Image (tube, rainbow, N blue to C red; front, side):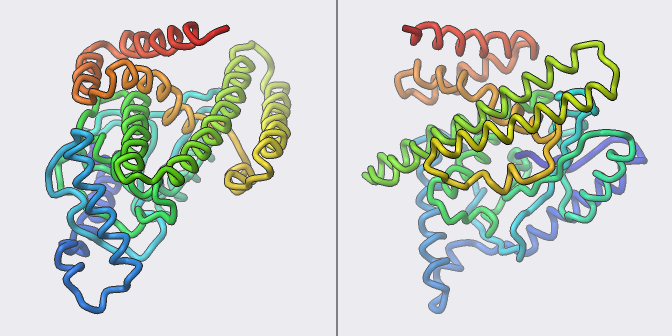
Length: 347
């Protein structure tokens, strides 16, 4: 997740200052982790987590080839569950996310706020315009190397794979970031994080945790495929030249089918309920646009990683070359690689 720390135009100054102020307040709370670990009365659980995350930080640079700098060497407890809240929006009859442009980050498919009330206020403005809107909390963000990003309490998930994964994800944004291509950036960082978690568990000879991680990732893939199918059905609907009233009814039927399909999928998972709260929301186009942003290109990146025989530096070089192409050609090459892999695996 990337946060824009600057925007153009006088009308955007309020947004600019909330971003700068929000980041500055976090930096004012950070403390070197080495100093925290030297405290004799530090909470034992926090000590355990900070020590693990520092080992993961070393692993990220030494074994994954991710940037070696002072990012995630300092810690800040910001006293809340999420560091920023992102606003995602689409038109009523579209699954393509609206974009907002920033001087450093380029154009991205979300707009981040350090206070939930500000995000909700902006979301309300978009709803008045007739947009489908989704406000979602994020536990981490990257300043793309412009600053040394701190480790936050929001990043200390209960699940080890998620803890180290979010660290690898954010460092991957520092490794490679392409302006105006959110789908590429987020899928690249997600693929690097997944490969990093796999190697982390192997490195630590933690086979049971790795097996659990694989099961979780399979469920995540199943769920994302279900959402992609729903998004495709909505996209097909919106292409039709139908009247708005009819499309609204069909839109709701497709979303209801998603909920029914999820119940079937959940039964396959022996009623694992990890996605229940997400599915309990009043779903719309914006929810599905976000899923596509983060996950649609991930399989393609994983094929590239696989084809390097474990040479991540070669993979990074290949992605750097892709990043120089026009966005359409870049995505075509990624999709071609994924389609080629699917054909090779067909019976």
